[in-house]
Length: 189
Image 1 (cartoon, rainbow, N blue to C red):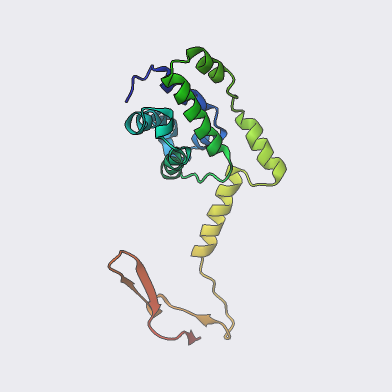
Image 2 (tube, rainbow, N blue to C red):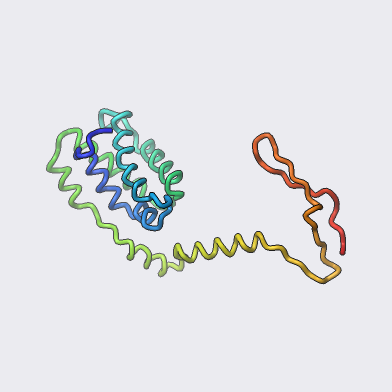
């Protein structure tokens, strides 16, 4: 990794701190209990990506960096980005890399000063206004859905078919998937 105190490292850190999607993922713990550490690690990984893949601005394509960051967000923060924010972040990182590599310190500093500040409470209130469920509501919905999927329904009606656990047979395939098949037709009770 390049020196942590390098201006490019600081620029990446500033860009990522101004990225609402990442900051929401960190604040809500989408990356687990170490979300903040993962976000800081991400700064160094992006800096390493440039060091290892490109010495000049045009050695790294925007889409390559976008895929790289998208993969990190997906794997480390369980977050799939559906807005256009990633492309904006990528363009900003590539631009500051270009300024940094050409020693355009004044322009780089001015660009960093103009980065927006993330207001997470504003983002949450926008979700509420749009009718989208909040993170807490999504957790409740997920919990209820899991409970309903795991619940067994019984009825006294003789017209309903009831399955016993003994009626099914499971077999693990070579690839690790478990296939569950019934041993016999359902019995009427």
